[in-house]
Length: 110
Image (cartoon, rainbow, N blue to C red; front, top):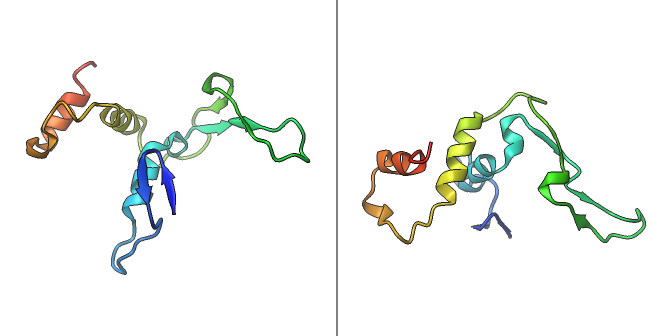
């Protein structure tokens, strides 16, 4: 079992035979920028290849190559998901809110 980006995933594969995508796979695609066609390299390093101590580098030091491959999701969709996931949902009763309300809240600053 693995915890990724605040979402607890027990299985990364579809647990129902008729379903092609699991919820964890969809969430992973929507949260990782790689699926927008961006190649990210240099996110971590080691001082010595014999030692397994991994040093995570800040995002400013990563190597980013735009349009390195065909995107699975559009950049605007990725940005919208990031904006929605950063909202403090404790202040609004989202259970009574429609998808149009989610979209309006996420695009309010743009």
